[in-house]
Amino acid sequence: MLHGLQTLADDPQTDVIVLISKPPAQAIADKILAQAAPAIAKPVVVNFLEQGSPDVNPEGAFFTDSLAHSAEVAVALYRKQPVPRARQSSEAGERRAVSLGNGLNSQQARPLRVVK
Image 1 (spheres, one colour):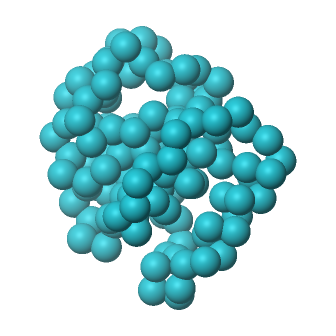
Image 2: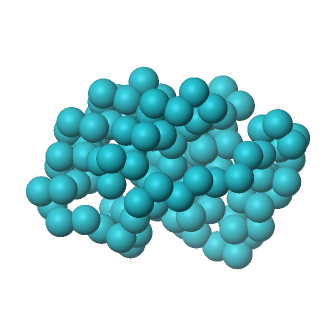
């Protein structure tokens, strides 16, 4: 995970990094949040699935509570708009996330790269 974050941080075509993962072991989460995220000069959207926001909150990291919220935050950061607050996930929220992605032009909507 740390290698993947660094690869995306070094990629000049990546403006916002979205990290969605099963909850890692606490030691790994602490390392990612305390060391890796602050060292990256790009915003990092973090969603450790079904886990609330951690105790550590490094600058440049944005914690989300659902996949829809992750998409909304990533698009807002990319567009340099205010970051939406978390709200309870719903089907409407999922549809909103899809519509946000559909609103991007072809230059903005690049395919996702999965880095393992």
